[in-house]
Structures are given as structure tokens and as C-alpha cells.
Image 1: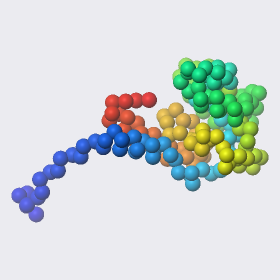
Image 2 (image 1 turned 90 degrees about the vertical axis):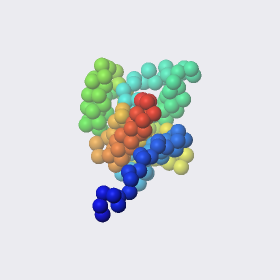
Image 3 (image 1 turned 90 degrees about the horizontal axis):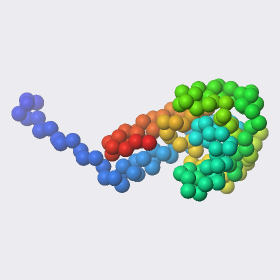
Length: 177
């Protein structure tokens, strides 16, 4: 085919509509549940927003005007604090180290982090209220730059890939989280 026989270049496609972009983000927020290895690690050892203390979570849950009030209230109703980080380190030492390192890199005191366990997790790691579990549990994990995955979590790779796509969409719109 000669140059004169080739089709003229097509104009680049326009950005999808805001509704189309919102739908893309909504789909990217949903991680395929088959990726879960059902080890119960995220239920046995959890944090709220990465590194908040139990007192901070209770204060947030008690303030209906605060952003994150409902999620803090729901979290505090399902998750119980461990007595110490040393206790948690015996269960999930690598995760604890990861959370502490990230908190410290953000200028937070890693000794103030509270780790939690779900009051419904069974000894074998399964959920004791799976059919009736809270909304936050149904939606977990959330693809986000601050999501901290347990070592070996089946969601980690897909969650990071989805976050990169969400971040690119937000960048196209001139937004960031």
C-alpha cells in the first residue's frame, strides 16, 4: 500500500462522558472475589485508615459531622482492639512491620497504631456472619494508594492495577485523592 492509498489518521477519541468515567471507576473499585484466598488474615489483623489509634476511631465515630464518621462507627462496631502490638506481631509480624514503616514515613508515631480483630472471624479464618456481614466487609479491600495488603493477599496485584487506572482517570479530570 502506498502512502496515497492509506487512510487518513483518525482523530483521537474524546474522553468518555463524566457518567462513563464514573462507571469505570465504580467497576474498578470492585475487586473480583475469586481473588480472595480466604485465609482470614485481613479479619484477624486489621487497621483503620492504615494507622489510627482506637481512641481516634472512637472520636471519629462519635462525631457525626466528621468525614468518615459512618465508616469509623461501623468499623468500631465489628472490630475489637488487640491489647498490644507485640501480641499482633506474633500473628502477622510482617504486616505489622509494613504498617509501622508506612506510618513512620508519614510522620506518624507507629507506637500509637491500634490493630484489630473482627469479632466474627472463625478459628479457620472464615466469616461467621458472611451472608449478613457489614457493608465495609462486603466492599473490602478498596483499591487505593494507601491500602495495605497482607503478605500473599490475592487482591494485592489487582488492587494496585485498579488503583493506577482510577488514578489515571482522576488525573484526566484534574482530580486527585
